[in-house]
Length: 277
Ligand SMILES: C[S@@+](CC[C@H](N)C(=O)[O-])C[C@H]1O[C@@H](n2cnc3c(N)ncnc32)[C@H](O)[C@@H]1O
Image (cartoon, rainbow, N blue to C red; front, side, top):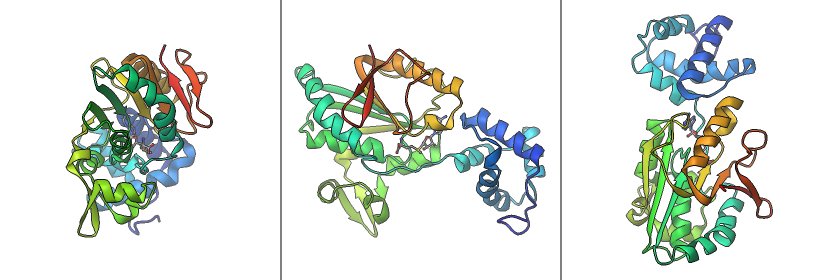
């Protein structure tokens, strides 16, 4: 028996069917050690849908009779962990090293474009927006695109409303005062910041031909979930959406090493950015 008292444990055959299914639908790669994770995350879906076993769930998916289950499974298996100014150093590097010359270069055009390519609940994209406002770019034409595979998490991102515990993570107190207003027990991002970001659903495995060109892309803490071929394909596509000289920022444990040699590795102390030729 597992978390839900009535749900029998997953059989190996069903586990393999589900990991194949999840890989197909999201690109997320789950090895054999993740059986506990699949069970823990999918049992609530089984219970809510009154499906008595993983066997029956797999039968529904196999027959193409999954209905909303497909999206629910993808939602349940994606990890949305994020926070404002995550890891801080990439944002410091942006502020100190990358943006000043870029601003000089665009002073007459007053236009900059950014992409938060696995935006989750929006903290990364809004951190960029606040940073740009702090740098005095409020009257520039700033476009920040935030995309994610999960519609549900994008709804939260669009709302721009955060719990106390979320604004306690990474957000300087002065930014909270300046860019948020109290909304009951929560905090609502002011319209001025929200309107700088446009959120839309996008699967990173799709062609990116219609995206960009961007000055800076943040694609952080998502490549870790994909297999090598998928990572390679995504990096090649991302490269194609950057302006020449534009920068890609990956998560702290991610790199282009052995995956793509088109980028120039640029280290600003600890944080590393990848520059398009
Ligand atoms: C751990 S969060 C990272 C959020 C943010 N980039 C950060 O570093 O704080 C990973 C996000 O990637 C999204 N994701 C997973 N697979 C995806 C795919 N194939 N295409 C687009 N987004 C995906 C998930 O829904 C999740 O919100």
